[in-house]
Picture: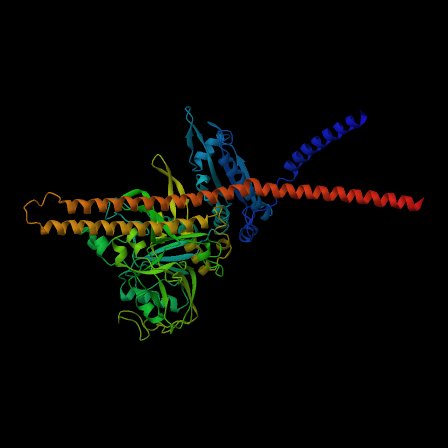
Length: 636
């Protein structure tokens, strides 16, 4: 009886101690954590710690979160907790120069008025007109201010970068200067020629202006200002010789450049398209390196688009909205296709490409070309005319993998010759400072697709009632360009934390099964269509040979031919259904296996380990007791 009571008291004491330790830990160990994720998703990267450590003046960060109104939304609470934990890590790394304030702007309170005055966007909830807030306001000691109106728009992988960027901007108010020279309306336009409405700047321009002093140059420019650190050239189509000379000489005197080219630019509207809509499909929409490419012997492959069946984006099949097929020239390049050896791409996870070209280097080029992004091995060089009138199914039927990886983004370095070795192309240009070769090794980033900078290629607008709250970034295209500019301008800390590892783990085996079935389905469908056309042709031939004046009536021979064609159609459709059924069955079986592993096998392994550990401990205690008894016997 006393033993049972003693056991109950011990059990009660253990429970009390357990809860006491948890409560004490939640208070005293709040800033301590152990990150057990494979990619250290919840650990502040070294670059972010460096940025926090370099803060010189106080920075105040206020996070507005309607905790009470968000009580029934665990997703928002979880994101808020992660943002809070991340900011606490920034504050700890800054040695107290970054302070964090957590504010709950209750409805109709002074805190809500402060949130509105700071530019935060509230979202209405309930019938009483209450609003929820989830935003951030950061300020420095010199009236600098950075605002994120709605934190829910931040892609989780970019959280470390977005917070580090704000701290970096507030700690470095003087922005480096870059110049942008574009053949596309990247900075907006007074009127969109297709819609007749004003066109706003691309999102990438807002990203650049948040970190740099951006100077827009006109395509007819004949010189690049000396105070420009990095030159961004976008889609250099129909540039004048004088403009190419300005770009050439900027690079020759040590200037760094990022140049985006294209084989079939989707964002480019040919001038003749205003009078002839067919020009959107027939006009030349490419842009290469012009005379610079001839001198460097590095340029886009002429009239060639990079195709990749394995990494293609799924689109609706023409005329079949319920069915999706791979569009082999619209690509999703994952981390495996992005260089791990270059700081620009090493932290990126996903880059999208829309009908991009193939960058080639001739064997006798004096320069080195390092590939930063490429297609997979299931690639093909596709003639640009096959993409002018898009037919995803035809592209798949004609697709023959080459086994080579086609360069999409590259870094070009080395001692470069000028494209204007004999001097300026015009007598109006000064010749006293002309350079026939680079004074130092050049460093230039080339991208084979200009469309990858367009908003819809990497970000989706998040709005409320006609008001833009922010953008949800689903790809790292913007990060790729910003990384390139930062790398060339010498800023490495922000670049190193551009994107953390992805929370998404693709089902590569399922994707491979889908692609195989897709090929089989399209091949079967093509065979069906060929047989139907052949049957129709035979019927028409029989009709043309009739001389009885009853061409509108089917003869028994025609009727039999028609019935045979219909039978073939039914059989082919049955085969198509079977291919899809087999695919679904394989995917289902794979999913069942994965669920069994997660639900049963892993817990079973853990349980067996626990049982084994318990047996080991019991046997060890028994052995210890036996040794004690034997020692006592010997001693006696």
